[in-house]
Length: 271
Image (cartoon, rainbow, N blue to C red; front, side, top):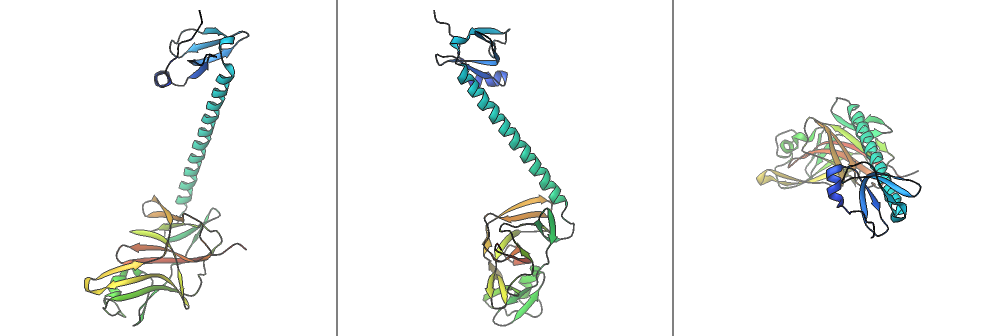
């Protein structure tokens, strides 16, 4: 009569008894065990089903190499998962330390070599074919465009460009995926935009005006980004893909009212 150990279903054994090992037999079946030990001519084990004292089986009936291989693979997987969990925990702690180092002052900060560099907010000029209006905080943009501030922009349908002076930003970065923190009192949206050259200026966005309905339709060349809220009113933003050398800006915008704040910077190519 052939000696054959009973075969158990793995999901049942795991749910009932926790971690188990498959002790494979040479006929292709296996016994789920809590532990096993190879002796001189036999294998001693504790059954995951019976939980009795140690039982034994002749080693000639056991596929010990297959059993060892699966145990080694399982241990390697557990070690890999433990390492990944430790790395993730370390990364989370590092992000929290980084976020806690952001100054309380509102503004944008460039993350560089484990330090934070404050960025200067740009003055933005609203330009039409009728005139120019210089603003630092564009949160009043609707009032300016619709004639509620001085100097007024004519109340007609058309387009306005929001521009920053100069052909290049003084703030330069050498990496192609820079990261920024922004501490804001409120923000409908954040973006990194590619600036378009225009004479001695760079265009942040073009705003289409529907004067009859008092509506603004901003259009900006946004870079695909990841955005994360680190804490209340503290946000982090960075590009999804490497950014080609050129002129860019981090912007905070209010839906339907155009860009509110601008911090321009340039990405330099490798030397």
